[in-house]
Amino acid sequence: MLQVTDQGKGIADSIKERLFEPFVTTKAGGTGLGLSIVHRAVEAHHGFILVDRNGKGPGGGTKFTVILPRLGTQGTRKTPRASARALA
Image 1 (cartoon, rainbow, N blue to C red):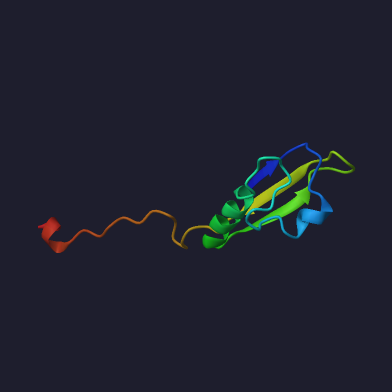
Image 2: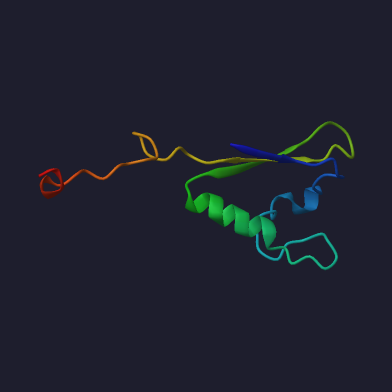
């Protein structure tokens, strides 16, 4: 799990439903590709992103939580088995 927070003005209600769509931006000169690329990468790894307010009232900011599953059931490292020829 990874959390990213800010203390900005938050996400406008008018954009919340389209937040992860490509080319959606509220910033002058922005491409609107950052969150859509992150969203695709997280989904490709079978994870998901939660978006919440980072406090109460205006100016509370936003909190993004990225949750990714663990790799494998036996751990992330697997060692190759030694062949019979290597043991001789």
